Length: 106
Image 1: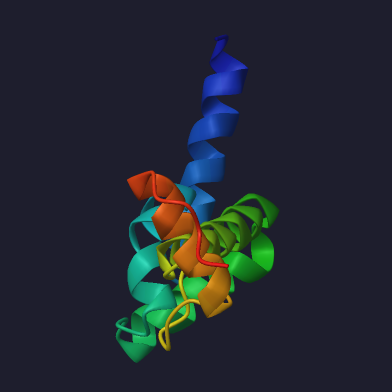
Image 2: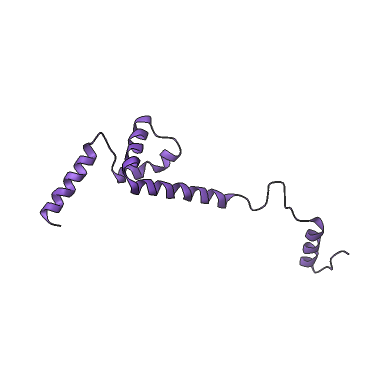
């Protein structure tokens, strides 16, 4: 990296860090879970939301993170409804009989 690129990078980082307490992407990343669970202090939450307004990358990452949580919760839901299976009793008896090797009831 040449000298001008290093200076530009340093100045960009310095402006972001000193502009009204804005968070960097790395700092914002550390607050994602607490933000979604409403556990951030009001001041930190405001700084986080200000960062999201100006950073399309973090905004996209937060949306993907939310979707991941939704999908994980959906996978954790029981496959059988809480009130039991909705299979007709005669079919259930036939399956049980077949597994035991007994002819199904007529």
